[in-house]
Length: 104
Figure 1 (cartoon, helix red, strand yellow):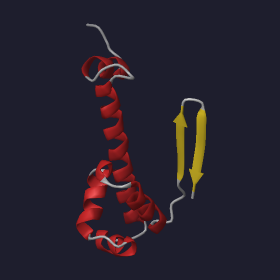
Figure 2 (figure 1 turned 90 degrees about the horizontal axis):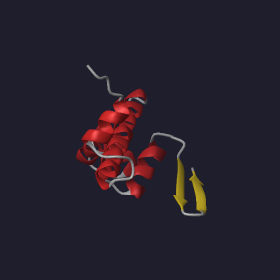
Figure 3 (figure 1 turned 30 degrees about the vertical axis):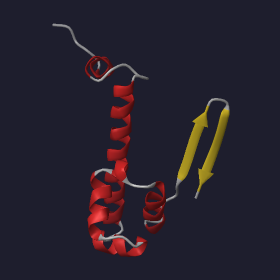
């Protein structure tokens, strides 16, 4: 029986790194992790979804959606959530030969 690495399985089932399907998979995975991190941090700060929503001016339902899938939320809303949770935010963008960092 041949043993495969996790990376080999992802390459075979999802596509190799740099392909559109793999890029979509990696993006969704990152958004899922961001949502889970928001939920965990909110709970550690002893905030309900409703309380966090009030802090940033949205309904409880939107906080629930963000925690479930942060991919369908604006950058502005994410930054407001992180600010309300007193999180340090760093954004790094790499475009060809241009790099810039935005920190909060």
